[in-house]
Length: 340
Image 1: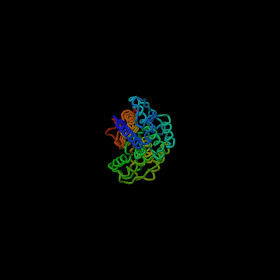
Image 2 (image 1 turned 60 degrees about the horizontal axis):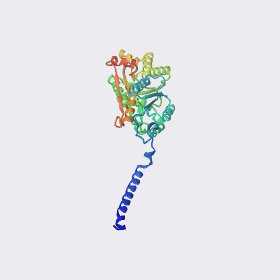
Image 3 (image 1 turned 90 degrees about the vertical axis):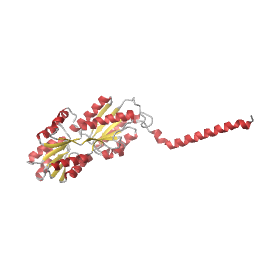
Image 4 (image 1 turned 180 degrees about the vertical axis):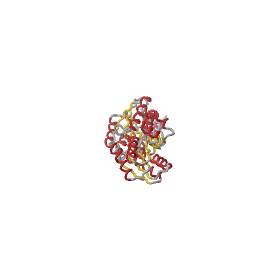
């Protein structure tokens, strides 16, 4: 065979090799450097989403709950119960100051937590910290407040109730009871969810609704402000409080003002359930906050270990439900043990 004949296979091999190299370069250019530079949640290395299913799971629950707030104690109980039952390390921390809550999120990222659960009463104050956590590859589930910003910030899901829908349902209940003028008591300034509740109540009520701002950290002032409002507006026949801790103060305030206004509230504790049973409180809106602690831990575990998500881009709703005389006896034992 001549030299020319022997060179033909070599030329063909060279051409094939060049084509493979060019294709690889094109694919590399399409992939880009960003995907290679992303790290897995918790600083585990590798690309985002490439989780070690056998790695220890260490989640932080970071809420805006004030110290001693009974509502958030139930959320904490739910998260810690999920941790025990699912074999997940769960740390619960809270601060009702938005700036301080943002720092708690930053600290959790620095500590290498592998999942975050965050309530967003003030989404604007938390945006940078949550987005930074997501960019670091840490999955986030938001709870309770801020559902409208959850997906925008990169969270994998939101667990809670739609506050406007819940407020509307509460307003409708008061309207069905024949009430015509409502006082809606907001206990946390800047909490977007509470404003949504009052806006929804206004829609469902149909009558006149006046908002009253109070400070949940000052129970004496709460009672004085509600009493003063009822004395000034004697035609108010319904008071909607947005926290179980405010409800009992509203009852006392109405009695002190000599008002016959009917009280209803968002959220439960044993005192509220007893007041519903005896007719002092007409009803309570129950968002089942135990689930807002429990479900996100389960969701983060499934996401980390199996790539699962829930909600299909919509909130996973835990409410609203209602507790009135028809079911108060059923619910009361659960409030005593701290799960409702």
